Length: 69
Image 1: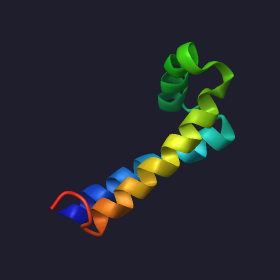
Image 2 (image 1 turned 90 degrees about the horizontal axis):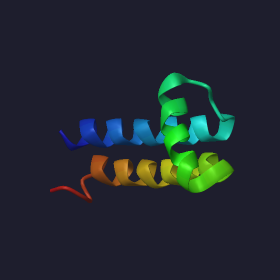
Image 3 (image 1 turned 120 degrees about the vertical axis):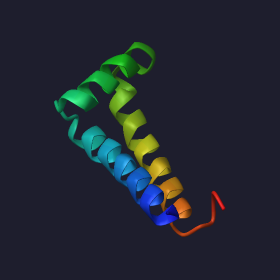
């Protein structure tokens, strides 16, 4: 079960990373970025790139069983 949740978490992080790199107009990302721009300004895309890498790392740790035993 850890592999499933870790994989889904890593996939969500990958989504944030790719959308942040491309400054995507995908509706889900656009809504998230619009809220983040209130605090981060134009650095919101950079924020999602960094958060995406962190979430991918967390998902990998969960998938391999290092976190959430």
